[in-house]
Length: 341
Image 1: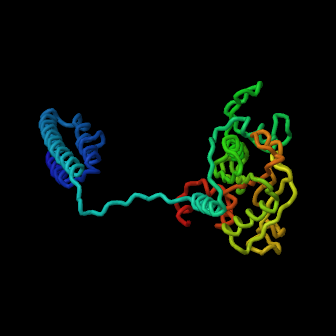
Image 2: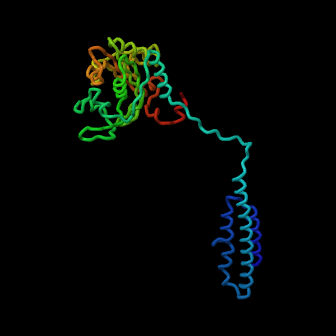
């Protein structure tokens, strides 16, 4: 029995000496735990004679004391190693480069749009994203009872029965036109790029948060011909000279006449394919001549001045220009996607 205990001590010395930082706790449990060989020997002391029990008990206590001391010394060594590794750094090892951000394709196309319209003398106008009901709807010829309001699923910030001080997240950037016309006299040429919000289900072609660009020109004798020439210039500059446009009659409360602006499909050149549902054309934006009542609302005489306005989604332009098939990629923040542009 004594020989076995001494053998366990030798094994314990080797195990402690060779133990690493990670496994020292396991070594301690194996040597002194409830299921250790020493604990098993102690549990069998009752089977020995009183004299043997005394001798073996003393020897076990001596071995346990030595093992405990060796473990404490080893723990102190491990602690010193940890402290040293925490304070020492090898400055010759190359650092890990942080991932650098990248401009979104929306940023690229937005900057390109601004440059294109500046060529035609347009200025950039801005307005708040939290807008009043008056500027977002009422002054754009969309009163409270107008059925056209059903087309906008609105995020209301304040919506009271009396209609006073109602505020919302703007559903389009057209309120920027109202604010600009209230503070400036004709002639006016502005574009208003910005973020807009609508409470709707998201899918590959719809998003609750998206960007729009509005355009407005007010002057004497402005006609649909001016509108079409500006839109054709902008489309061909942003998407290529092989694109044509067409105006389809439509309805918007703030323009009269109103149009849907289509562009010829870049894949089939207007012949018809899967990408354009075999129509040869893709819907791009809405446009029209500014409604006389909107001009009156901002203090501009419709008998003296006329103008046109247009508005469309910047994401739609980005998808057409870069061949993106899902609008949700544009707001994902996925660096693998963004770094392609």
